[in-house]
Length: 316
Image 1: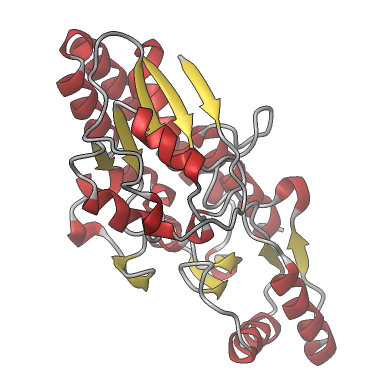
Image 2: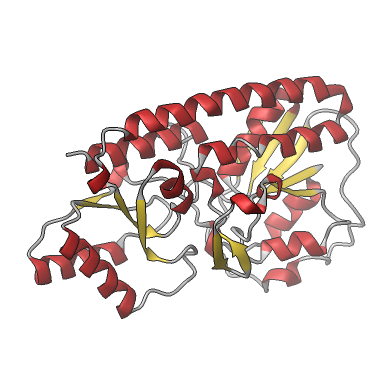
């Protein structure tokens, strides 16, 4: 397996969709032998592709560890990497904002697949985010995320039939591991009493987590970090924390915690209630995996880290 993570950062460029169509490419490159070159939008998507593709794929990631996909802006380097890929995988449900429109308008140029597209819409949570109709953070329900490797398996097998058996075996093995992971999450969270199952975070990314594992979820910002935070949202959250004596709130690795800190200042001043801000190396992974060597460098590690931190902070 070959993995190359591209840290593009927050780059102001010509203008979103105007990046496409200027180099004359008529279609994706022809597949002539291994490795299969794959470009993924996020580290979470890349984790699935890596597990299913194994040694037959070379994975390139546009948004590195800790990068917020809601506010990501493409640059020309991203365009070149998309053009060089045999296959492109993205989350979908407008997690990547305007990039969803980009992939839709360039079907002849890139073989692009949305992992969330494999999920029955009836299982999704409705949300108006970045032009989409559903909450895109589907990976926080491990059982739901287990439905996505099939999309990777089928796309790789169609391009590389010689590896179809490998892709099928890898996808099946990964599905078994995710079933075990779901059980492990439930075991860790069992320590949190029902009355303490309130998860307060920087933005409302944990809706699927809350629905599946029995938590009320409150975010300072909406489903997308691109939404603005006003005085009303700040007051609403401060009042909820103070009146309900919520013991801890959680920072996220891909979102700055200044907003949460301001809310906690309000809680202390108005309610004389001390609240733990769970951050630093205990911050929750939300829209991106962690760097190599951190607990969240893989999807499994991210999920177990989050479950452990939540259980420890709220079970006290």
